[in-house]
Image (cartoon, rainbow, N blue to C red):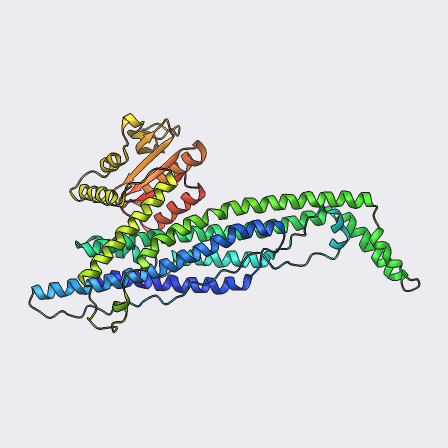
Length: 490
């Protein structure tokens, strides 16, 4: 088990390093969106999203590291017990992992640094109805997007994560001890959080790219609308420069090259373009606004794992078999795991708009649910019973998706539960699933969600492979939660 603990801990350290690299890069992009109205809309969504996601990354890094440390100490406990039963001294089973040492980087404000406008803007500014030249920095926005993309990919694609975590979870599931079970709950939360953080980092990256492109598009359209002004004033300025060699004030004609009526017409067109640009920024911000609450939920969940009592454990000498979990620390680990689990449950119920169980009632129902699983009870039946998926409530078992494909034909999709009145379906997964089956089912479900307006939820008994979790998380983000998945109870 020490290898599993080390994998979790090293994942935390690795994520902390990647988070630090991201923060260092972002520090060079203060005020990248500019100061115009669109910049304020963009920054209003980007700033809380970026800061919440960095909070989540910090807690994920610390959470992984802490769980790894505690499980490492627990492994020493079990090693001692096994050695004592055999009347032998405990053998050395490996050094303790390290403690996370990374501080959360700050995210600079996205608005505040205006890029200069073109030379001719001062000639038309009085006619653009109070609008401002789109003054964001497209290059900085695109570089920020790349930094967020790099971070997103590194969280789920480095040497330690997530495949090593996935393998570690499998090793922990094979253990039968209360402290290991509590650590497994926290490690499973952290594994799931990796994909949520990665997906939301990509959402922030796309928002940066979209805003940069909107600035480019607005500049191009404005310059086209102002072509008449640019050509005529430019020509007159050249002529005026030549005349000024012989007469005074000849170049002043550039300012009055066009009539007030023409200037007003050009200015109105430019104002219309900028209004459209401002609307595009609001739309871009709308996508980024979903990041902050999702990241905050991860940060809150992982804060429990990050608060594990590891000071004494972390202080032990590497390579020594000195670290142990006391009974008090084992109880604290269980308490923190239960509170973290309950916090996730509360967040889900709040999102669903449904009243939650009390803490004690939730733990009793959850443990009863697990006992059913351990006794070999059918996963689908357990899900149906706990969620009230009965014919009386409109749910029917083993129903085919209404996708125009007959049950005997290729492409037919059978759900474990369906409610045709509400256009909702539930797919139960009691274990791992091969990639070919997974892909076919997910593609059909995506079509049902996107084209037929169904809501589909995958109820997972345990987390799936990294590649599959990535696809599930991405589809959830793309559909705004109309496709969803849930691991474990309720």
